[in-house]
Length: 398
Image (cartoon, rainbow, N blue to C red; front, side, top):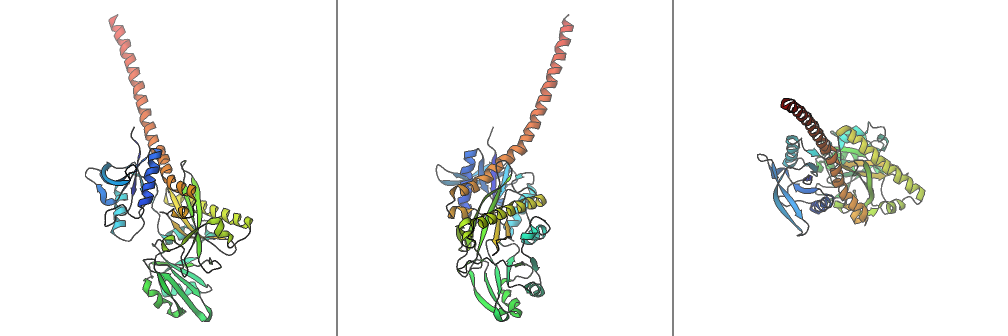
């Protein structure tokens, strides 16, 4: 019997090379080979619809090189396509719609605002959600600022810290406006009056495209912001399991802690100890963060369908309460490599492969059982027919 196959669908670069997750894909392919799963990479543009085949990228470990080869459609698909409001993403939606019969490790989930609205109705999660509204009018912003001293504005469909804005209330009724542009570059901070905010925010073209979110005080004593990235994944038994959680500390003058934006990875316990000296307090916070991870994953999956993994960005306030800042359906895992947690990093890579194998056995195993059952019933019917024919032949010979 041939090995089951897993196709990783991703974006296409102008150069035609696999793309920014090339190192992760290479590790996935090697992990798959060890477990008996044939893994390859492709984009929606690599599909030959007439012949139902794919011109895939395959990695050859012994030769340390990538090759292109025509292959049949995979048994399973691992979607690593990050949202982009462009033709690339529209092409992915076309592929998933046309080939819905394929077995996908994860279902699509909506953007930040829709997820916030859904989770705000979940009893197990709503207490950990910062208040948020859509930014459609200037009045939305002014109303949300009342009684608050710290607010974030985030692109509804943004990723990686791009385009995020931080508003902090200062003495004298002014607001400090800090942020990053769409290329993640730090924008020069400015102090403006509240009535001047819409004009200052015009550079981000935020109306109708952003949400306004309650800020959580997460500055360290040195003034740098920080948060935690929790990775929760399905294991080889199809169950949710916390793979790991690591801290991220932003560079000076940064309003975000994302690694792509210059953030530094720090072990979770070390970062918590900088703010909470008690081991009991640290352990209590860790348990609360982990429980929040399980609750979020189960709630989202119950509403939007099967999932493989989620990355959760979590802030901890001065009292030690965890707050869910963002849900990432296509999470990175490099943070564990950077803090030297090699076992966690290896697990973060292998788990999608292990889950894919479990899902394959669950789905295709049922089909094989049904086929075997039909074969057994047919064989039994043929045996009964042969026995009747032999009895008739004996009576005829007499």
